[in-house]
Amino acid sequence: MELLIGFTGMSLILFAFVMNQINKWKNDSLIYDAFNAVGGLLMMIYALMLNSYPFLILNGVWTIVSVRDIFLALSRKK
Image (cartoon, rainbow, N blue to C red; front, top):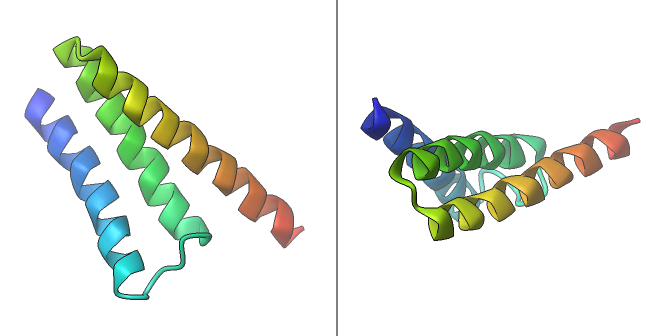
C-alpha cells in the first residue's frame, strides 16, 4: 500500500512537470497546481509512513505552495 501511495504521488507531480515542460500546462494553471497539490499530499502521507521527516517537510512546502496557488487561481476567476 505504501508503494502505491508513493508512486501515485510521484506520478502526479512528474506528470504535471512534463506537461509544463512541453508547454501543455502553464505553471500558473489550476490543473497544474491541482496535480502538484494532490501529488504532494500523497507524498506527505508516504513520508509519514516511512518516518522520513526531511521528505515530509519538502513535500509539505510543495503542497502548501500548490494549495496557495489554487486559491489564487480561483480568486482570479471571480
